[in-house]
Length: 505
Image (tube, rainbow, N blue to C red; front, side, top):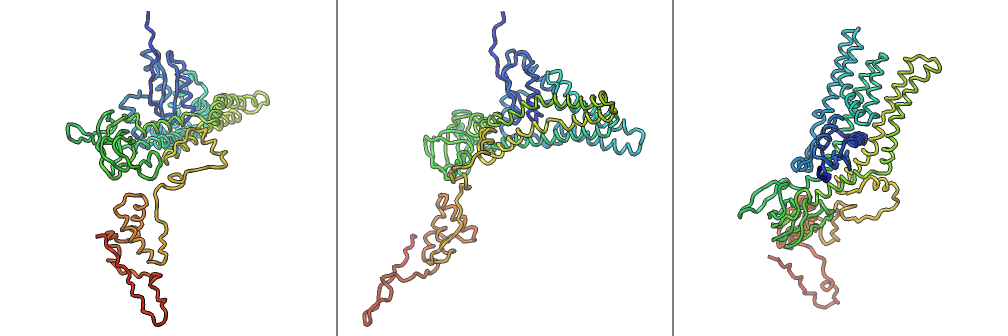
């Protein structure tokens, strides 16, 4: 007897997905692999999750996905950390789609140049140029059809291009294939930017940390920290991991995580979050969560899960596109066949029109429009510190008529600024600002910092607080009420003296 093996959760990183149709193609193919269940694919994060009931199922999964034209690698600890810490996809011309598009464009340009020199060979030259781009497309269409997904954008393109060659429109066929590849490349670039904007959240966490080890400080990679490590966080450093303060006291700027603009004073026994900024004191912190479980990592996962949750419009587009692609094939075939059969119209003209229907009716733009708009919205929010829980929330925002907001850090930048200085006739605005900056020069309060910043922007040299009061310049003060010259005729004049200003020094 064979022992029952519990299904194992497996995660893969899939490269090359641009829109929801790519994910559906992979999902349809994997449902036919024995032992595979609970398939979940995120186009935005390029992550494939599934359960495998047998030990050798993973190899079959990888083969099926590669046959469809996508790259796939298992998500191990190293690859996950590499992916989570913002690994770039590289410039577009180094990607497989970028190289294919460039080669196809070069081949078309060469065919156009040679056609001028060899007038009798235009058809062969343009057919060869078209084949450079069409062969990979046709291979993907065949693999998808064998995997149970015959109605794909690659199928439409293959039929249209081959049909154009058959009716002698080889130049148009080559141009259409190139335009299709350019469109796919642009989709890939847009999807890559959305993924990069989400991964950029991880840049809030520093790459290295100072750890106490054997009585000395050692700089290590922040991703290698484990629970129980003791960190030393200097003033001005970002906190590299979630932890608990063992000793020290400091004000921590938690705006990158919580949006609260005023630094929060924390001391022994209190929790600190990865990505926050230690402002004015040295802290010893014990790590309480590893890199994959810290605050920033959880925020990134929430954004990814929000993008995986489909909005009502996106679900409708998905259902619609499943019937739309076969319908386009049927309509194109009817346009090409019925007029010649029923009305005796010329075959060449109507086959050309049927192929045009296939090209115009490509559903890729329709399928990618809603997911791309939602991904762009969620990613833009993530870059600005907003966690939007899915496309359904974005759609609901369009129906909102009234909004209540907490102004600090939401409607404002969360950082006070001096906009106006009003002297009230006692002194000039510059003198008031100079005195205020002198008093606040040693304070770490956000308003004090704003006053000092304004003085520096005005080019004021900030004097010590003690010297700023009276000893630097004489100050004309209006006479007090008691000392005003309101005496009766013949009475002694007022002899009250104004008290000198005391220096704090």
